[in-house]
Figure 1 (cartoon, helix red, strand yellow):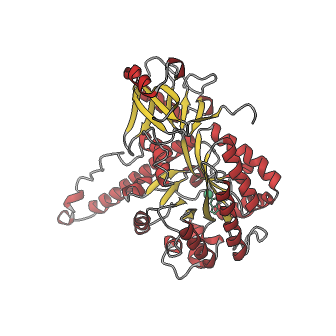
Figure 2 (cartoon, rainbow, N blue to C red):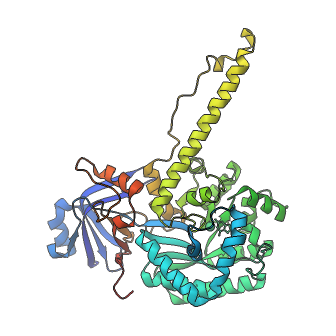
Figure 3 (cartoon, protein in one colour):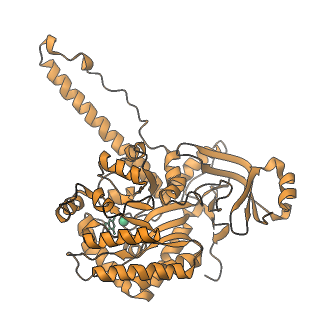
Length: 480
Ligand code: GUN
Ligand code: ZN
């Protein structure tokens, strides 16, 4: 029988499917030595559990009254070096922002010591905000990217690390590689990472986006990913100017998705950020390939890129998670991504309702001017469609996106995302009554309402502890 390492007792909240949020009170969860969940049972059978698994009362870590466990959150898209300028220079649209702010900053990461400092800060900050898994873009610099992998591993964060590939950059020529270098360094990068045999850190093939890669580079990266069965990440259909440029650079392709797809970069291990302007036809290709979208609502708004219609992507059964897209997004917190995802879907709903009303009004006006026998029966009396906001993303769905949905997007849902027995214990202890908590807890508030209040108003002050694979990684060990 597996030996029990930790036993936790209290309230657990997690998603079991996109719409099903479970709030399970008075339960006990046990983990083994490698952080896997061994049992998750009602605390009423505590004595039976303690006999079966060989623990006693003193081994149990019990939560306080209003505290609860939730799964660790998963950031499916974040640029670690861009934390350097987070919250600064957000006035420009995407392509100008890349040229003036992003590329010059990323270029400084050729300095490994500078990178070490910044990556230390980023990993600590993301962990403290409850990001137990992060899918990182680093820079084109292999050694600095390896430092990011080392740092995530040292702090116990689950992570995918991408050495960025780009052999085309007309706007900031200093920051690019040759095709040959990019391939050679990508190989070196994943070989070094594989040789380090980290427990929870993996390489991910990272063509920056179609504009910054030649067709040859995309093709070689696709083949490399296929040969070594590697994860892939990039950006797609983020802004209108970007799409126009892709069309100019890749005239032989029918659309943006095809640029990646024909070069073997759209697989069931791919996560593409943004996707605001993907057509239904392209979403069907995502679905067929099993490729995922990382929804980055803060960045989409901050850089005035556009909106992703999450409901439509979900209806196409495309895998989806949330991304902070730091520093296109100005918040490192997935709580912010949850809020902005809900707000974006409300904006889309309101815009659609308005345009439907405007259309109806126009039709009514036209009908007023028609002779009676020309009036269309269907729209007679100017029926304004009943307002129905079922298309708005619910808070439960947003919570799912930040946890289980993200794990599915990264293809790690057999390992993390909720508290199913056999998965690893990636969890947050939420304390709604923390010192300086940004919200109040009144006695009449239910557990579900408490969760909602935390999702809308909470922050890292409410995140008391963070566990990855059963290891307590926040508060940080005193030697770090
Ligand atoms: N497209 C290509 N590079 C980037 C980047 O760094 N951030 C965002 N938001 N989009 C990109
Ligand atoms: Zn990005």
